[in-house]
Image (cartoon, rainbow, N blue to C red; front, side, top):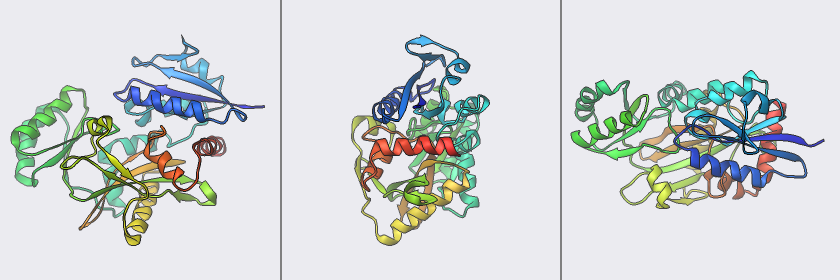
Length: 320
């Protein structure tokens, strides 16, 4: 009997459109001889749909054997949908609800990274819009400009900016709060080369298999922002052009943060390789799974076809 796999995509987040593409890629590449794929669409209001009709989560989840989560952003990355799957005892691939929440909450992820002895950029945490001006004064006084301004809890580099000087920093902070960011993080800007490393549990007989590094090459003078991604201004090199020593250290720290955040099945973490060392930036527990996405690219570079990876995820979900 074929396994019924529910593919969750869409969702009430700023990354709704990206999630639709990830979900479509999963649906198109899931081996049809082994699995029956069910396209479960969640609209921007949070309403679930199956076969074009609204349906309750309880009803559709009772009709599937396992779930693959193609969601991105607040709803999928925060652990909310994972809690729902756990409530109805549906096996699913990826981090559990707690691990998802820890990784998405950039401040908590930093704390776990520091406890694990990893380098992370210095930061200033802003809890509310009312604190914006006072925080900006402190940031200008204590941080070399420019700085990175980012929302806490959003993914895909949405809302991330590189700005310097009182007025631009304040404007970037206020803009994020105005757009609904629950908290804002301002980080020291670490100059260096950006790398991303994916960890997949149980692949090729390894407890934690580390795929080749991907070097992210943003536009000159810019950063790996959401706008740069959408405009196609970011180049990638896989494997990254790093020395053997740096490559081995990137692999080590990717495993360290995967464990430190209590993740499972797979993850993708971002780092800056600087003259002062390797700095941990953040971890994505639901990385993009489109053809051009970084995780599938890195696996393809070592001969792991995308359908094989999806089959591996289904097996992980069913056995752990």
